[in-house]
Length: 345
Ligand SMILES: *Cc1c(COP(=O)(O)O)cnc(C)c1O
Image (cartoon, rainbow, N blue to C red; front, side, top):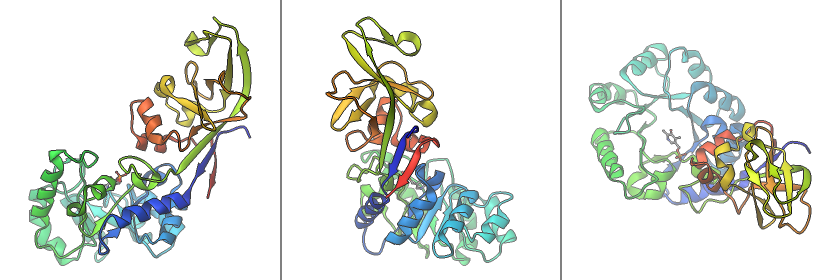
């Protein structure tokens, strides 16, 4: 085995979906966000397992992702597209039976002219200023849209991972104001919103990161395990250095293991100094810089020569690795490299 080995626990993803589903009432439909190739873990495999677990509605970022998901899942589930109905997407949306979440008056016109009668949803901007119709646009369009029975009307929270943030209440109020009296399913909550409680749940939730074991879903079951094979091990005298820039200097007789993965595999170089690789329950510090294809690890304190060291495991989550590099678990997951041998269970 030359490349790293990434193991993805599909049962854990299904269990995390069930756990998030249980956090909302029995009348709330829990969807699943599988954009960016299922947060880097393989949208087809993930969505198949989630469909088995009971997911009826999936969310992706762009129509191309939706079309590839449709080919993998068949005709059953609804596939909603956050970027809405973009220019040039009409055939894709029609053929793959996608539900665009329309973001503007322009998109609404393109949709009803290009695909009259085809399902759609509406995305509202309640303050994040990223996607969705502004209150004035929506006021002008609401009656027309409602006549055509949108499959859902949704908005997205900017600060849901901070429960005490005043933005949550502000966006909730804006959403209530914009949807008052509307007779179609409503959706506001992603993972963070699900955890904030029933006032945010409405009819449909759209968790992503929590399914994949990431914060803010602290009770999630771990989903990924990443094991890196050791290519060679060498002994160092005190004073010898390791890697680019001589960034590590041995202060004692040391043993250094070189493992097969680097920043080209999504292990961010900035995270190196704070990263540990694990041998069973023992953490071993990275020695020197993370390079493109290789990481050097101080294994002096291990009682035996390791054949592999583990970067992601129950001891070290994607969020721990993200913290080391000053980023978030989402970025670590979606950066996981194409070189890894991937297995699923
Ligand atoms: C990515 C995304 C989600 C899922 O968010 P998580 O924080 O991963 O649960 C839901 N809705 C929208 C609009 C998104 O962009």
